[in-house]
Length: 112
Length: 112
Image (cartoon, chains in turn cyan, blue):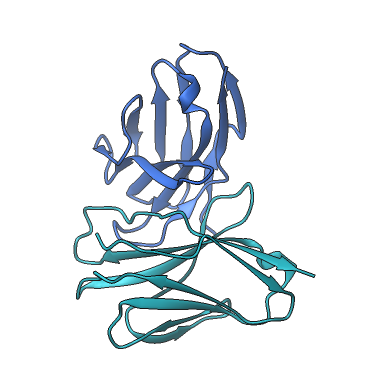
């Protein structure tokens, strides 16, 4: 499984756009990229998933460059309620026998 | 909405006790997972199951066992609890092996 590297923590002010980058240098051709969000005292929840270029939903955008060795989760105009830990996971849809591995994530703190 | 229910939010047990952590999902998912989460270590996979009566070891199975007698229920068992098993335990289910994970709220276990 491809190993991912994320910053341990980030701070942001309310209303700003936050970009969290995940490095996955040894991503394989069939790997896809998934991000989860975890609030304190709760289990993680799925945010967004992509394979290449850009994916956008009501919560976030995911930018994946052509070489796919990194990806960036973009949260527009964060609020205090976006304070959470964000996990980047990389896995192969075809190799469904092995569950995705969670790393240590990025702790985002949004400040008023 | 998918509902993953963990039987206890908080438990306090003594060293050597047998501990059962129960997890039930209501969406007929075939795939279920147990993770533990510790500060600075992220989520680590203990066991998973892709079908009734089927189980696979994750990254840290030592000291744990599981039971999957019914599709909707996946139990984590600590045969003889130890203090180093004090942790937050998270159960998840998924409709596909590589699909989105739906987590419960977690069970915080303290072993004295």
